[in-house]
Image (cartoon, rainbow, N blue to C red; front, side):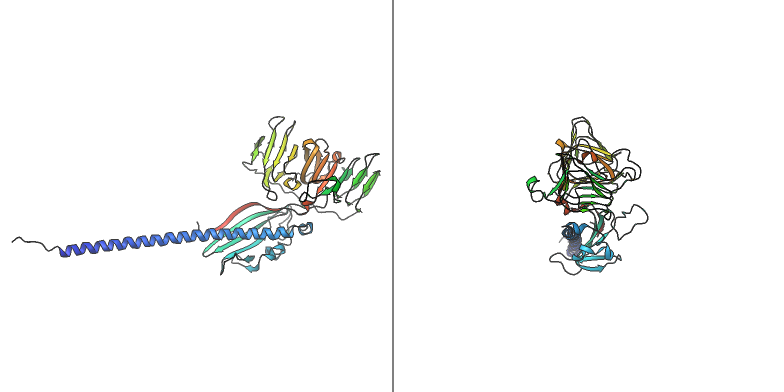
Amino acid sequence: MPWHRDETGFALIVVLMLMALLLSLGAVAANTARIELQIAGNDLHGRQALEAADAGIEHALAALRLESAGRNGASNGFDDELTSGGTGGALAALGTMTMLADGNFYRCAKLSGQSGDDGYCVRMADNDDETTGTDDPTTDADDTVRLISRGSVGRAERIVEARIRRAPVYPCVVCSSQDFPTVPGEIALLPGFSSDSYDSRAAPYDAASAGANGHMLSNGDVTLSGAPGLPVDVAGDVTATGAVQTVSPPANVAGDVDQFAVATRFVPVLPCGPPYPTAQPISGGAYDPATGTLANVSPNEVIELAGGPSGEPTEYCFSSIQMNGNSSLRANGSVHIRLTQPSTILGLVNTSGRAADLRISSSVNQPPPIAPAGPGLTLGGAGGRLVAAVDAPNAQIAFAGAPTDFFGQLVSGVPPTAGLSARFHYDEALDAPEIYRTGWRELRNHPPS
């Protein structure tokens, strides 16, 4: 009878080893699933925390826009919001003031359905905007600040910072900010000049229903020089820190005349560069990011700037724009052009027809008492028509060919005397200035995504 080895024990060992292996694999799989679930949860919470932080920025913007619905709300820039550690003014409506672990005060609130420590906390910070001396973190000098928002969901925290800008607001269609001792910075209204107002939010300009907010404002003198058949007609107030005088009639002022008034403070335009953006959404022309210049290539070229929706302009930063010939510049949508050097912009076309949708800001500084060597900004409109809000408080402005109609607002150090024989129409929509983001960055992402 053959002998057989008893293999029962060996089979048991194999089964036990297989079971152990399967258990180990199951444990690994369960641990992997747990880690992946935790990663997915962290990712979800991280995205929710980012959404909460963004919601905080939008809540703050809504509160600021509500305050800026009229000129008075924007009269002190963001100074009131910078009080109480950057939680004052319109930001007080956001929620409870709380000091967080970084030692700063915030206004904190929750999204619908959030509880516990979930939610967002927001504060405002100055952007080091003083041009001389040390920075004052409680004073806004350039209508630009930073909003910092912390969003928290579960263990996740995302901190974002948005740079916020408010368009300047001045009660005038023609505004002269400086008084030059050697080259008088006065407003000289010439025969045929007229001013009035309209509201582009309600309807396009109609002379038959024009308003009486075509104000003149000068930190110098104002002279009115009419001629037979060509009167000076101001449908608004005339305000000057110096004298207001009629050099030759007929000259009519429908509103109040205020001489030797307190000087108006004009918000300085700070340089946007260098450096200049490496690329900008421009069609046509030649843009050099090394120098920041934009120029037409051919004499009849059309340069087009892509814009955003009303109230959310696309920002452009140039050292200068230099145009010649019959070239033209078209702003398609809401556009904000910032310039740091003397520029010549011809054939300006604002496709929306709303002054607030084409803003031109120049930081060129031509201080008194030295007479400027030349204009800091030269403008030419298509067909003699200009629709824009121009802010060049320290520069001399000139027109390339006197416009027949200017819609919007013109702020300058020295106004374009040669052009002040045209019809100027203040757009009352500028009384409610836009507040919009000009930049965004993330400061903290925890846990890292």
